[in-house]
Image (cartoon, rainbow, N blue to C red; front, side, top):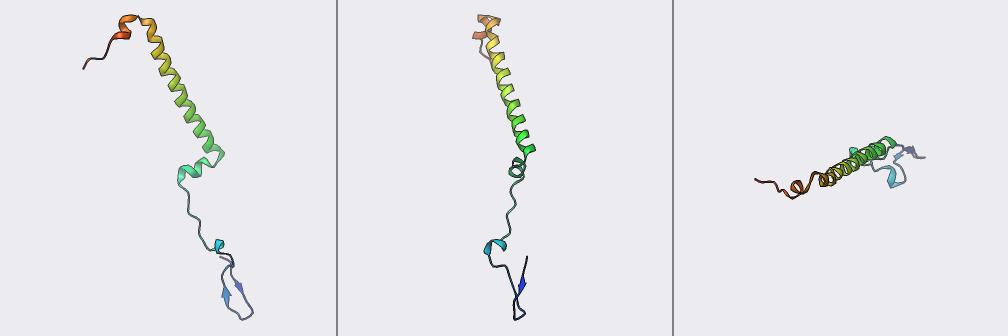
Length: 77
C-alpha cells in the first residue's frame, strides 16, 4: 500500500478507493480456464466426450446388422 507524507508530516492513504480493496481470488477452474493451457484441457475433454458419443451411437446403429431378433429383445429383470 502506497502512502505519501504531506507537508504537515502526516501519512495519508491512497486517493482512489480502488487501490484499497483487495481482489477476491477466483476459483481454481476459472483461473485455469483463463490460461491457454486451460482452454486446451477443455478442448481435449470435450473432444473425448464427442468421440464417445459418436462411438456409442455407432455401436447402436450397427446392431441393425445383427438381425431382427436382437433388435426386438428387451432386457428382462
